[in-house]
Image (cartoon, rainbow, N blue to C red; front, side, top):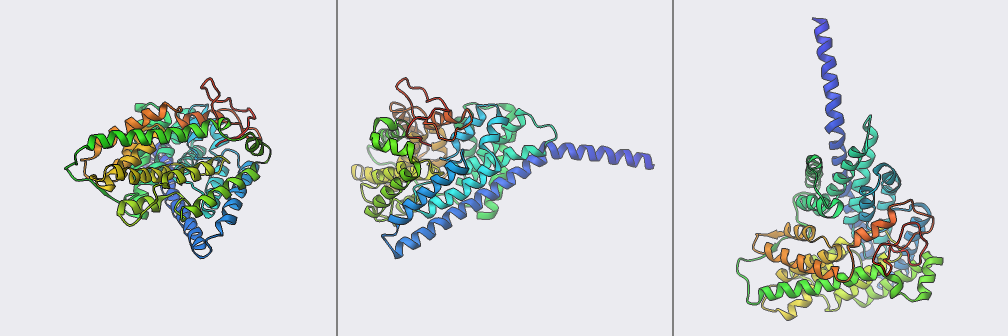
Length: 460
């Protein structure tokens, strides 16, 4: 009897260890991604509320705070935390397209994770135009990648599944849009969907999403956009025009980021190459001036402005999309850690506000929804992801086909100006970073500049 009990106990222990290695480690990682995503979002919101409170008392203070924050972010990033710059999505793509262990060991370390959170907090405390969604993707991927240490025999397949699921779960938790996390992993990160990965991916997204819901409650990122079943005349024309306008604007934005040598004066490119911290301070000063001219609406991610427009309590200038784009470019040229999702949605909302002058018979929230999906699709050139993110904010399905059409039109228009932004930027992370950052801008031949070069204007 004792022998039978010992044998049963041994079998149970082996099965328990097998289940833990197969599912338990992964589930624990997904729980951590959900928790970190929620509290990182709260930290960023708190940081911007501190900046807003300071600016409301001393309207001129951003002229000092914003350049100082930009300079500090670039100094710390370049000196101590190479690989944490920018949104983080290009880094994740580079890891998935490279030998995972080596690339993940450079770009998805716990050190990078902590830096991403800390430096982006400094940036938002300075009012810089960054979002938290892209960083959450890199944070989620880094958390899950480091869970490989608990596997007795980790391999490239396990590591790739962890990175992919962590990145998708991070986006899902950031927006509270689980479908968008799945589509993002398929469309942007891998451009394919493997059957052996699907269960791992979806399980991670579900767990992270449940944790986010449990902590933050059931909410939609920008509230609920209500679209009626009846559409006004010329609605199809409005969809096409919105797609074209936002596609051109997003394509120009991508072109500016990827072709800095063609529009930035040589003296500023030299300043960027030789004194990047001073260049960052100059960009911060420009952002502060633009923010003061815009009445403070261009500071931060733009979340409050976009939501205010949707709820009818915010009135923005017709120049808001242009001014926000200037602020956004100024935040990314120096290589400050931060994402582009929320600022892009805010700029799209601004374009919807402008197009309402052309189509006054349409409801403003409806135009804003179309323009948001159009501009985000143009910037990322991932129309399905953009469409799903905005679709999950819609109350009802009457607008779904129109959102999809706007996303496809704008994405195609954007590609006339520049290649997919994240893929182009990911090329610089394929090999170990040197002390000075290489430029990911595209040469005349249309291919990404090889990583490891020391060109001017190192854009992140």
